[in-house]
Amino acid sequence: MIEHRPLQSLGAANHGWLDTRHHFSFANYHDPERIHWGALRVWNDDTIQPRSGFPPHAHADMEIITYVREGAITHQDSLGNKGRTEAGDVQVMSAGTGIRHAEYNLESEITRIFQIWIFPNQRGGQPTWGNKPFPKGARSGRFVILASGIEGDSDALPIRADARVLGVTLTAGETAEYHFAHSSRLGYAL
Image (cartoon, rainbow, N blue to C red; front, top):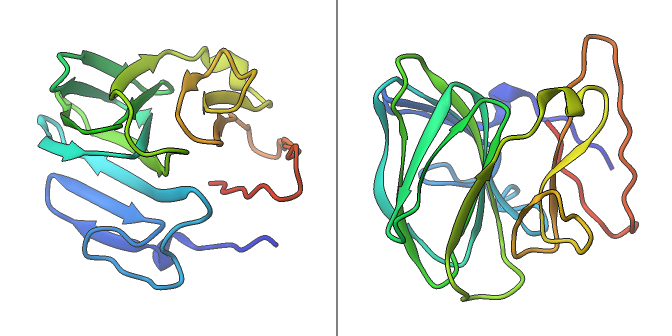
């Protein structure tokens, strides 16, 4: 089944420094028909103003994938990890037993990200963070695995979930196909 959801049907909030669209129930947006999609719990489309961002806050038992669409995001966490992730690249945080982190747009222009949360296969575990640049040309017209917990996806950033996050770049009129390994798999595309 394919369901088309227009942008204006998504939950939305504008906090001045953050303009966000929620694909699933999140924060003050609640839609009982849109709590999650399988293991996919959150997909937020965030626009973050320059020199602002998310102050330190805690997470546990969640796989958090950030795909930077425009600009850059700077991460810092309670484990001492620090890093800057640029447009087209991805960062992953496995919250595990608990981690505090901050995400800031330290740039002079806006940053746009997809923030994706996936339920882990198991609760607990040591928290981790990592980021990775992905060659932009490699996504032209074909899917590239960005983050994955599926055996054999060794080039992807690891997550602790039986899931994949893929990226593809298409030009006007171009198409790409993705075939699921099992008919029981769910997909979510933007």
